[in-house]
Image (tube, rainbow, N blue to C red; front, side, top):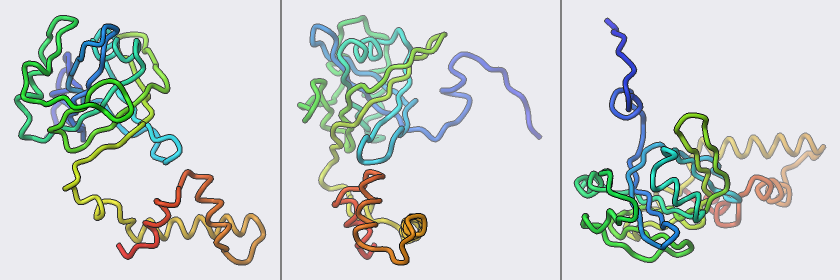
Length: 214
């Protein structure tokens, strides 16, 4: 049996279940004061290496959104489950100009390429600058941020995560063969593959993953 439920405030947060990750986004206001808040309306926007981007949704009156509009920078910090209490602390409605992190155990560390701080306890961090801001008519503000730096804990098994699975290799080979046919070439040459890879944003490091035995 199925049952209709009423659409109430925050239906997207506690009624409908999304496959989402809770992040802590850190920003600076015009005076340089740190702000931190938890956000889960976040997803990859452009996965190619030429312009890696994230899409993040905010309330337009939130301190985070206002700061991002003013400064053009933000950091997406991905905490672990053990940081749940501190993460919830940043969700409280503190007055403007208050650094929520001062009420948590999070440790602020300098970011590599943007001014807002990163959080030491978060194993994955994305430092971003604003590419585009979209203000919807009602309350939501959408920020498309270009990833300037991806920072992870050294102990993460990145080598396993980076290995390209065989099904993806088959797709790349098929696309390259189609490109060769369109260009009237009977064979797939190294130059053709390299040129095609550059067109879609694959650099030398990424192509090396296709040569691995993963």
